[in-house]
Image 1 (cartoon, rainbow, N blue to C red):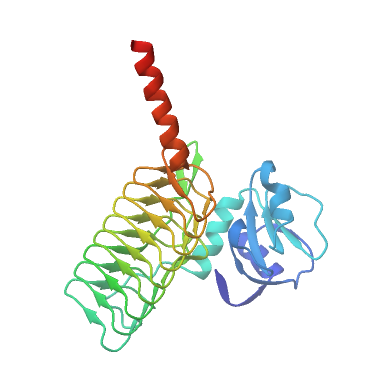
Image 2: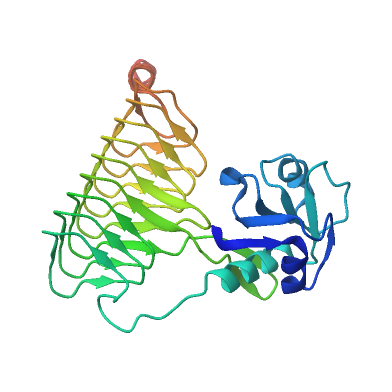
Length: 307
C-alpha cells in the first residue's frame, strides 16, 4: 500500500509515538508485507524468528519490537507492539469510508458494461468495458476489473484478509488495505469470495475461469488462462502460475507455488509447492501416477494378507 505522498521517518514516528533509528527526513513511500515489500516500504516484525528476514528484506524501514543494529541504508521504528502500530498506519492512510449509495459516485464503469439489480459497487472501484455483473454481487472499495469480465450472482470481491494475532483477550485483526484486481476476460462463478490483499493486490490474471463457490485468500496471484473448479479453497499468499487446472474441492496451504501447466485432481490437498506440467493427486500431494501405484500396491498387499 503506497501513501498518496511520501512521508518522513519523523512523521511516522510521531504518528505512532515511537522512537526511531535513522535520519529524521528518511523518505517513506508506503507499507507492505514481507513477501511484497519494495524499497521505501515499512515492514513490521514482532518475533525474533523473523528479525533477520525483515532486516534483510527489500523494505527500507523496519517496524520492530527490539533495538537492533540497523542495516546500512535502512531505518528502524522501535515499537512495543508492531502489529498494533502497523494497523494504526493502515487506518490513518487508508481508513474505511462507508458508502452512501449502492453504486458509489466515485466508481468508474466502462461502456457496454451491464450491472444487474442489487449489485453493490464501492468507492473508487474501476470496471472496464463489456462486463456483466450479475445480481447481488458485492465489489468492495478500490477493486479493479478489466474488460470483458463476467461475475455471477452473490460473488464478493474485496472482503478482508483472514489474518489475526492471538492475544490473551482474544484475536486481534490485521487491517486489510489492499485491493482485488481482475484482468481482462476473467469469469467468476456464483458465490465466489475473493479477499483483498493486506497491503498489496489479490490478482486474477487474463483469461482465467473460476467455477462456483471458490475462495481465494489474500494476496494470492492466479496466472493467465487457469481453470479452477467448484468448492476449491486457495489460501493467502499463493502463487498459481499460468495455465494451471485445479479440479473440485482442492485445498491449499498458504505461501506455496503451483507451477505453470500443473493439473491438480479433485480433493487434493496441496500441502507444498509443486513444479509445473505434471498431474497431482492426494493428501499429502504427490504425482498422480505415483499415488495411484501406491494405492494399487496397498490394495494388493491387503488382498494377499487376507488370503
